[in-house]
Length: 202
Image 1 (cartoon, rainbow, N blue to C red):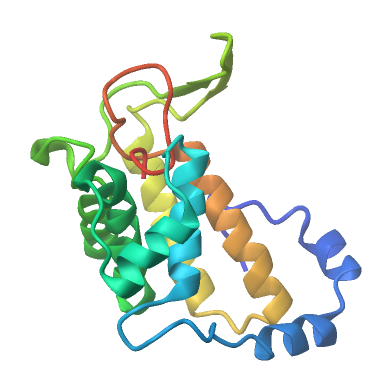
Image 2 (cartoon, rainbow, N blue to C red; image 1 turned 60 degrees about the vertical axis):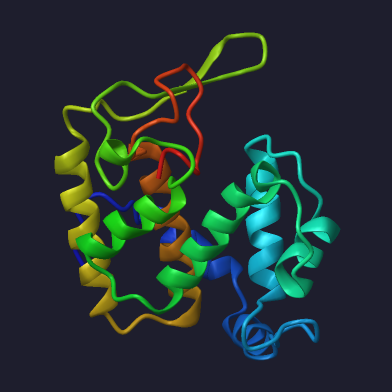
């Protein structure tokens, strides 16, 4: 299997360290939380809250569950960006993989972060992440090569979707897709400032 941008050098070492049967059994044993309902996913709420907290959101899981599961109202600024992430997770869960899905997911994700003209668009500026003391920690792909790099990623994901992968290979390539996606960091930043974020830099 020939891929254009997703690295495969570590696949053999990874597979040698993984117990395929144990991984499959653990995955098949996963069940939804008792708190979930047809209209509410506990684990999607957990993912939304803690992903947002990584980006600096000041929200607690207990408060968000009360808001999402039981309809408790808070100030809009407290919940709406997490609501956007929750809605994005729900959307991509069942959406087909294509460029339109990527663009629509970014629009949902950045509804309360970016101006409309920047939603669903590739970034046209440099993106770098800094440490709290102002040191540059990471520089993403140049905006001039983002479209080309994303075409490679689209092609690789399509190739992988058509391949007969084992469960350990699915986990490996899911991780690599995430790594490449974050390294390219195709989406517009929140403000044009120095620190990119996963949420605004989809």
